[in-house]
Image (cartoon, rainbow, N blue to C red):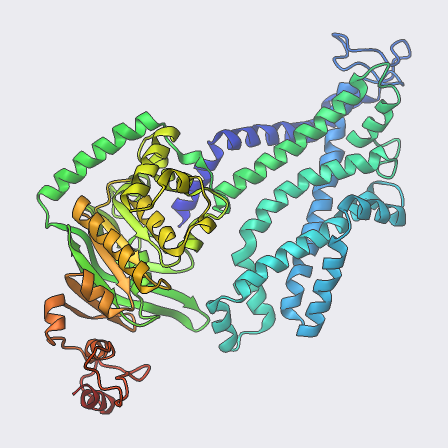
Length: 609
């Protein structure tokens, strides 16, 4: 995890935005630290023979009404302006976070009252609150810091409460509460670490806003008072002489704008580095991608020539979830493989570990979950050995491989597709990022892929947003995204859930056509035994995180299933000859089949017989 985080930071800092942010912060830091030392005397020296003088080689931005060098005063004012902005932002952010977390600690009625208070406060413009508080606290630096800091609190409290509420409803928080973890420990141990990323990103942007707020207060005469001066005070003094020497107000104005932009760019860089808002900083040039992908294809073909013809091989895969009672394993050491061009189905009840196993094999499981395996190999390239990538498998190489050779069709396409982007843009993205295509070529290919998955009026649909399409069309869009590369494996995670029978058949027909046209293997995850047996040639059955059955579909339908759970799944599928007067076969929750026949097992055998 540390190396991955370091690579992400390096990628963000080396992007154009990151470089600009680093350079800007360096300039601001140098001016804040060295400004009063180097230019302090010059900033306070008056020249009675050069009052309100326009720019000259000696005074690049001219002089003010007292004959003092404007540029020197701007550089010296950097320290006070930045320090006050940092102090106010720090105070406001810490107080806002604490207030935002307070409803999760207090009783329900008191928590609702706290939420109502900062919701009421956020209804007023921040600058209006700042001016109101500055009048109460009085003029001066300390009053300005308190006023701006308190005006930041409602917005941060609202943001923190919203983020905390989104995490508060998750299963791991409910499990912690059921285990008896106290409210304060749940908030600070389980909720706050999961919302820290967005808060940190917004903190850097808040500093830029605080700079502008301080300049506004000082401009109005409510902030810094003489003999102290900051950028806002200089703007106020220069405004009266703007027709005599515009540069007097121009220099501090430029300083405020550049400093604000610098902190905003710093926030964007932190967002990319922490994964809150990943940007395109790691993209390579299209012509470089084409060359790299060609080399990768050659290397993969050479590797596959001397190995078993398996597109996916998983050995002893385990996934662990942290709890207050220790680590819990929802996936308990499963092993399976998918041959090239094979149609494999994976069935089991909800919570049996089907989707989690496939997500872990595809490298899509993130912290705090832990994934380990003796070996996970895809398309001849080792992805995981133990808890890390095997030596020689670079992260960028694996990323390109999974981006072009593995397709994922998720259960709910509406949560997988970005509602703010057009369908064509999202389908074209894999071709642009991983396929070395230009934007125009990627768009044209995206339209062709939409046509391949039987979407009518593909050009028109490409310009629409996901909410404008039906559920079946959205599933086809997900399949089209996978076809932008040359997939060797398509993992379809319950692609027909919540679809009517007619649309289910259409989606399954599209998957079957894709398999026949491209030769891609398909790993179908489903609850529906009829869907799996109708499409797949081999079936994997999971129960309580374990793989309990692996047999061909023909043997399954012929009644050769060995495990009682598999037999119960088959028996639960009604047909025209099912006796409706008999109860449907079921398995008691938590039944353990690992120790051989039990009393419940014998009862189940009686039901199945």
